[in-house]
Length: 155
Image (cartoon, rainbow, N blue to C red; front, side, top):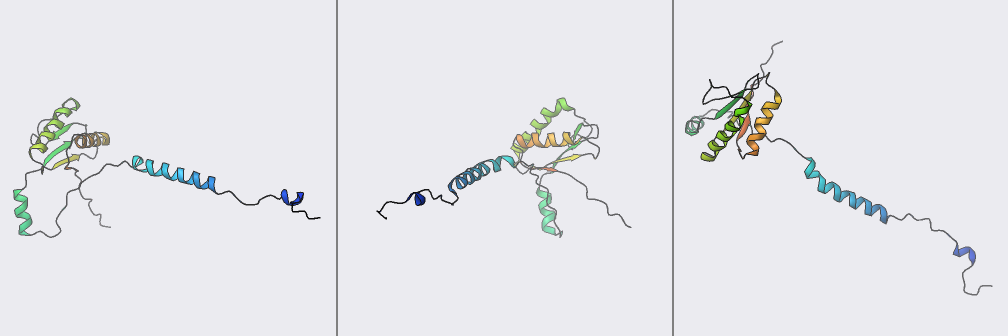
């Protein structure tokens, strides 16, 4: 007795397929969230280290004579500051704003002015990084940290 209508048995048959559309939606939303937050998470201190020539030639020594002498700021082991211009004058945290203003003025007068920060091995690390970030935040572009090469130990 097939009268063109479906039987009850065919009508109740379940579909055994997975609906993938919600998974794709969630994946795309997560992808967009990660793409937006990835640049925010990446925070680093950029350091422009000075380049040393591998082969010393006459042209390099002649160009070094034309360059201005670098301005060196020293952080002592007590956490105080000294400059290469006045090595006998010891500056404290109260004088840090004046020191930063002087460095900013130097770099505004001469864009090629190199600024070096050298910290004593026993100096508080926070003082060196604080000075470095202060200079960078005030628009000083040529700031570098000075280090000494390690001494080779003969065994």
